Image (cartoon, rainbow, N blue to C red; front, top):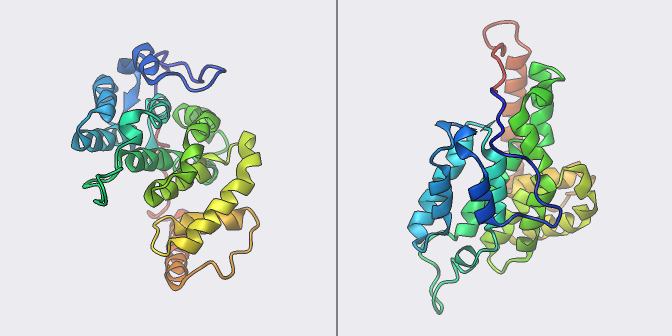
Length: 268
């Protein structure tokens, strides 16, 4: 990992910078991605606001693959996350998925894809990932993992962009926004929002029996000391038991003195 001066972390005190300012003021070529450098990122980020929804969807997939591949947070992740947060209220993004008359939109709303990408980034830089990293690589894990630390420092401003979407009229947008917000809210400055997130998590569990974010909501409620009895359905219990079994298996491998033990360098 090499130090870079291509981007200075932190938004202006008055809130999120304008997305075009971020695009123009960042030296993308100096920032590392899963595919070398961020030379192509300005072009791809611009396509997030294309009038063609298929172009936007392809750009969304390409952007997040470049900065968050195989659970590794890359150097360009923080400025990309900030740019994405800055376009969440852009007219092209906010009107996408409205449909025409009673017809549903023919594609996944761009908001869902952008929020999902932000949520995945936040999840891969959350406190549990730091704990796992420290267990495997030592207490200096986060000090040496500058890419993850920069992303974690941005959590309050990213949360401020996601929060309004918790009340969105589209259920997929609401649920995806909640998933992102819960991971982002671990930042110490966001503790005052916990009560609000608890209400939204309980709403999701009560009204969305098939949501892919049920396990994340249940985990968050448990971590926050909430009683989840009566909130789990049969599928939740099955998924939890399977996950616990897999975690026990991984823990056994990590504690092994044989070839199952992890002895590789950290991903930075």
